[in-house]
Image 1 (tube, chains in turn yellow, green):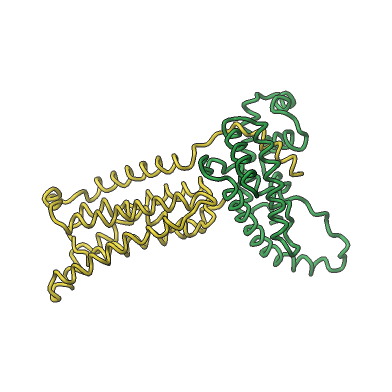
Image 2: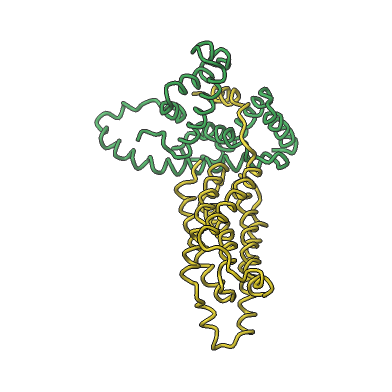
Length: 212
Length: 183
C-alpha cells in the first residue's frame, strides 16, 4: 500500500472519536480509588480508633507520605503516557515522598530511645502490610496499565513502574487507615517494600502488556 | 521545523479533531513529508525501509491522536512518536536479520529468487478479517469514498465506518506487537 493510499484511509476515519487522554486519566484514577476503597472496606477496614488517631502526628504523617506519592506519580504518569511531554519536573517531584519519609525517620530516631528502634521497626503488622497493600493496589494497577495502553508511552517499562507507584500510593493511603504501626521506621521499611512490589509488577506489565 | 510549521500544523490538527476531513488530509500529507525526512536522516544503514516507518508512524499518530493536548505544541508530539516507531523498527529488524541467516543458508543454491520487497502494511492487512480487509482496501488502494464503499458491498455507511475504524486499529495494534512479518 502506498503512503498516499494509507492517508486516504486515515482521513476517511477522521470522524472517529476517543476520549482525550487527560480526561481519561482522571476518570480511571477515580475508578481505581473506588475499587481500592471497596476492597479495603470489604477486607480490613479502618482501625476502630481512627478519629482519635487523627490527632497524633505519626498517624497523620503516614497519609502525607502516601498522598504525596500518589499525587506526584499521577502527574508523572500523565506526562509519561503523552509522547513528547516534558517529564523533568514531574520526575523531580517523585523525590518528595521519599525525602519526607527520610526526614521523618531522622526525627523518629531522635525522638525514640535506641532500645525501642527495633520494636518500632518490626511493628505488629508487617505481614498484613505487605499482603494488603499489594492486594488493595492490584485492581488499580490493572486499570493504570490499561490506561497506558490507551495512551502512548514511549518508555513503557518506566511508565509501568510509575503505574505501580501510583497504585501503591493509593493502596497505602487506604491501608494506613487500618494499620496501628504509625512509626516512620515501620512505614519507611514495610510500606516501601510493599509499594516496590507493585512497582516491579507494573514495570513487568509495561514491558509485556503495554505495546502500541 | 519553524514556528510557522508548528502553528500551521497545530491549527490543522485542531480542525481535524473537530471533524474537518480536508484539514486532516492536509495535516497527514505534511507530517508524512516531515517524518519521511526525519526517518531518512536517521536510517544511515540499510535494513529498515524508511517508508515502512513513515506508514507505521502515521497510523500511530492516527490511533493515538487523543493523546495530543490541544494546548501543547504538536511537533514534539509527532517526533516523539516517529522516534519511538523508528527504534521499534530497528529492534524488530535486528530480530529478523537473525531469522534471515537461516533463510540464506537454505536458499543458498538459488540466490536469484529474492522476492520483491513488500510493504509491511500489506502483510498487516492480510491479518484482518475479510470484511475489514475489503473495506480498508476499497477506501485506501481503490480510493473510494465511504458512500461508494457502502454501495459496493451493499452495507450501510455506518458499517463501513466501523469496519474501517476497527481495521485500522487492528493494523496499528499488530504493528505495535511486531506481529506482521513472516512468522
